[in-house]
Length: 67
Image (cartoon, rainbow, N blue to C red):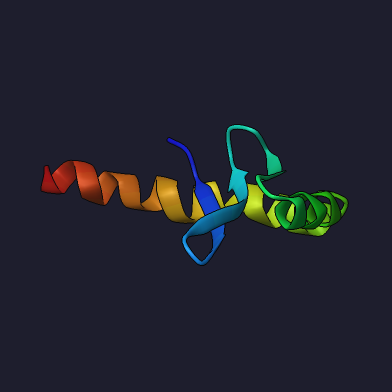
């Protein structure tokens, strides 16, 4: 299970957080700057890492039961 949060502008992906990588990755010049800024914020990174447990792991049982 992987938690991914992506940030888009005009259908172009700027930045992505992936729980398997554990940090933000930028895909454009602006996205790289944002990723560097966000990766230096320890509380934001820990919050994003906790989202996997809060969102994914709680809802996976519901999805398995429905299938």
